[in-house]
Amino acid sequence: MDFQQYAEAAAALLNADLPDVDALVEHLHERQRLHPFVVEEDVAALHAFCAELRPVFVASDAGDAPTVVGTLNELLAKHPVTPMITGHDSDKLHLHVADQASSVAELLISESLMGLANLVCDLGAGRLGLCRAEKCDHVFVDTSPNESRRYCSERCSSRANVAAYRARQRAAAG
Figure 1: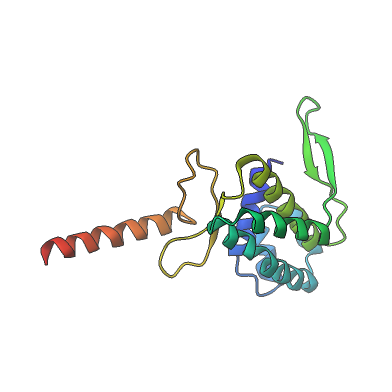
Figure 2: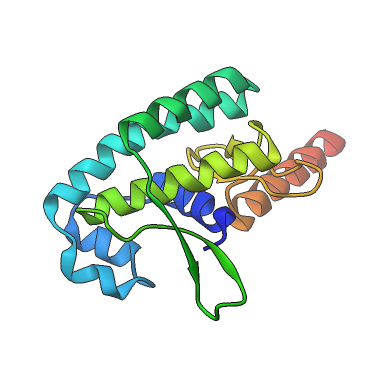
């Protein structure tokens, strides 16, 4: 697994609306092997984890690297990650989170933390952000070469650009 994918999955987890087991199963639509194991306790554990994780994105967005690192370290201590070397075709060895988790929530939490910790180490603590679009509270992972990402999605970016264009047009007309 690419650590960037784990980090982006962490952001997707924070952005997901997960009121119940069915919503979590839908969130995991591409990971069908996990579906039979999703239970109500996973939903509760993920809600608690998201509440602990969101401050990492807030601190990163504010340029507060010590808080990003400190909070991630606290979360890594609270939710230990067990990495595993794997090679799907034996030529490309890489790390995954060991699939020894006792629950789906534990696996998702471990993947999230491993991805975010590696991203922060590789790209810096300022690569996590809060969407700048009005009325959007989503988070994102910025892997752009020039750290220029400001929106969680193309949809929010387009809406903000259209709103800014219309505001300029109104100002020019008035």
